Amino acid sequence: MSFDMILNILIMACGIYMLYWAIQMKSNKKIPEMLVGKNFPIERAQNPEGFIKATFPITFATGALLLVSGVVGALELLASYPMADTVINLLEVAVIIGYGALLMRAQRKYLVGETQTGARK
Image 1 (cartoon, one colour):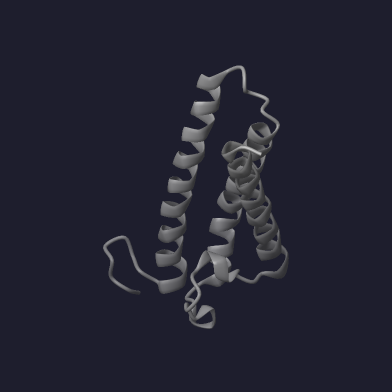
Image 2: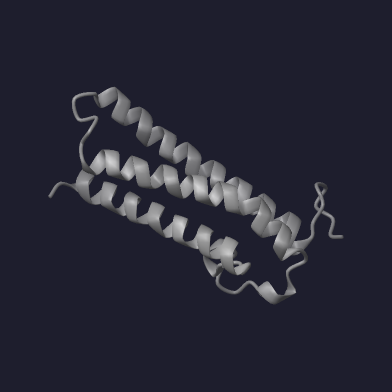
């Protein structure tokens, strides 16, 4: 088993994990600890419903993209197109960075209660 195969399986598992938590968050109306950090007091969140509403679509979409790209990579569907495989890998990195930025913005806005200028409500 090559390193690429192991990496693609890990990416696929990450996608499944994100999809699971997105669905759990939406159905239970409970914020998963993986989205806010281990020591964040979720019970003191300013607007948990707003956070769930804002982060569910991006968490679900990111999980779906990671799952699909992991499957495509693990099955080597683009093995004969190395440029397409590189583009998908770069897309994964861009999506993860964008997801992290959006998640941090949602945490500040809905959980901590900061405004755009950084002042707390």
